[in-house]
Image (tube, rainbow, N blue to C red; front, side):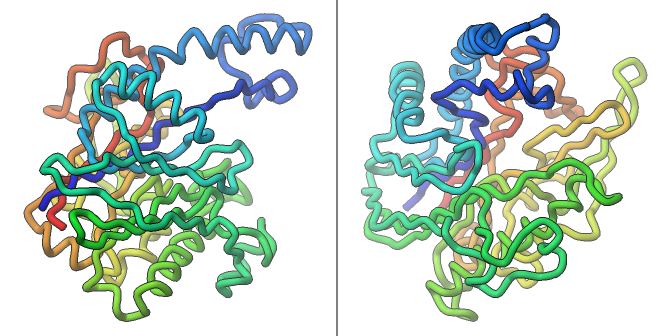
Length: 368
């Protein structure tokens, strides 16, 4: 019995316009920076026109990336609300790709921008096994105090009663052809700006580490601490952290070198250090595990894995021969691919945009 499971940060699947750039230049789109916009009402009209102009191409590419996953269950990050999800599923996935998802689940979480995690499921797998959703539970209300996770590092930017998950941990209890499977869909805290001499990743790591501990707590609370290894579950989503990266050296004229680099510390160590869950992406070659290209100019460029399908030990053992697939055709042309990994981009892909997303979908065929 096989299941196609995918995760994808679709990036800003919004049903509203963002006018904050008129008062905050850090949030102003680069196109509008070229023009002298003198009033907020004029800015709003231009923002609406700009957004509408490039959204259709972007969402066509997002739909193509999802179609290439051909997943029975799709875990999404950065969906605005159920209305936006339904409009995208019907107008793009169903009308354009020919296959939609009848079952959709989204619960509003904690993100100040309103971007949430969601799960889309077919009614049956490709081999005809019924996909039955028994329960969907949000853990957005959990606080540091609830789980006794508050510490000195968190105290720099948080309070004990603050919510742990900056979006949510969505727990989805399933039966696939009568067999149990639990999914935990997350989108961890993003890497913010540098602070107190630390880069953005280090400055926000304590928050992501607490989120990882909270995910473990939720799973251990359900199955029992020390009794999770033989259970069938997966953790899916954008973790906004990595344990290794591929540094990109050189330039377009002289060529590029790709240098693997292991991080001394990662928030994800909370999940992996004792094999609580396993990252099947490690079966791919070290230069070919990335799901995102990061660049802040020629001095800071790397490839890394931010998007994960973590498998419980039992699920990993059952799928020892299965290797995750990464869909990279929606990447913009600015993404620097190691030799041999180049793909044909989707039609009308731009240098930086339009694109399916900065993130690549990850998909696995699992025997459950």
